[in-house]
Structure formats: C-alpha cells, structure tokens
Image (cartoon, rainbow, N blue to C red; front, side, top):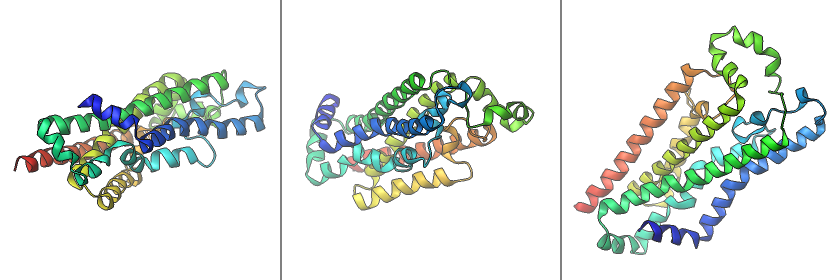
Length: 266
C-alpha cells in the first residue's frame, strides 16, 4: 500500500506543485537577503550577515514573506500536499475498496506515516539546501543584525543565555533547528491527517486545522519560539511551548486515529 500511495502522489499535479513550493520558498527567501547584502556590500566581514542568520529559519529577511507563506500557511500546504486526499477517496468509494483489501489499522497507520514522512522529508531537504547555499554565499559573515555588538551585555542577563550560546555556535544551532522544524512539520502533518479522519469535509477540515495552528502560533507560549533561532525568548518560554504543541498534537492525532478505527469496526 505504501508504494502505491507514493506512486499515486507522484502523478498528482497538486502534490507536485506544493512539493516544489516547499522546496523553493526558503531559497527565494535567500534572494531577498542577497539583495539587501548587495546594498551593504561583501567587503567587510562585520557587515556580512552570518550564514546562520541569513538562513530561512532565522527570519531575518525584510518583510518575512517566505516565513509568511511556509509557516503561517503550513496547514493549508500540508492538506493540499497529501492529507486532504482522504476526503476525495471517501467520496469516490476508493476508501471502502482499500479497506476490503487491507486491514483498517494498516490503512490508517500508513496514511499517518506518509502524512509525517512526506512533508518532513521535503522540509528537511529544503532547509538543508537553504543553509548550504547561505554558507556558500555569506561565508565568513559575522553580522547578527547588530546583536553581536551587545554580546557582553547579553551575557549578564540570565534570560539571554540561550541566545548568547546560539550566537557562539551558530552553525550547530542551525542544524539543531532544522531537525526541530522538520519534526514539528512532520507532527503537524499527522495532525492534519487526523483532522481529515474526523472531518472528511474540506469546509470543516481546512478551517479547523488552520485555527488550531494559528492559536498555537499566537499564544503567549508560541510554537514559533522553538522553531526560530536567535530570538530573545529563553527556555522559560520554549519548553512550555514545546509541551503545549506536543500534547495538543498527540491528543488530536490519537482522537482522529482511534475514532476512525473504532467507527469502521462498528
């Protein structure tokens, strides 16, 4: 079933479009950074952006257009990429035919697995490529948007210790955050799939997924705190944000999966 699902996706134009979108958005974000860097010049290291700071996840580009597309609209992208296909499968009777051939648990476990693996892999490739390009273009850069000039003052403030550590180890920080963001996307991919399990209706699934995502982004313990490096929020905010994100995601995934399996059994 896994191979069949993947082969079916590769023939789907909508999947290809959103897969390309995930790959290209972070790279296009670099073009905005590059335009700004050309205005400053590449002559002095202190005026060249540090490669980690130029990377997509740092959110340092003017306008933040790339992040607005990929992060704020993530539920819409994930649903279009793969997870809302469950709706059409139910409408055209394909789901019933699949359940005759395969066990219920295998069908839904495969869908949940793919809803995590597909966007996670695409995001990982995109962010890794983004970071490698930034390393090549901004090699030797030392500018952290002026924060490097205040490093001594930041060291004296306890809440800024994580930021100071990240600025001392920018490349390792970016690698860690790439993995964190990849896992976060993979988890929310499963969340959108679980939502579609519960509500196999475009008009319900899309608003529900988007609302759940936005609420977590805009909450006092925003999920952006653990997906963006070089920010002033320390572990006192990041750890609760991770706990809230993981717990809410696991609840939705659990309800969506077990409710679907039980409903089919009945």
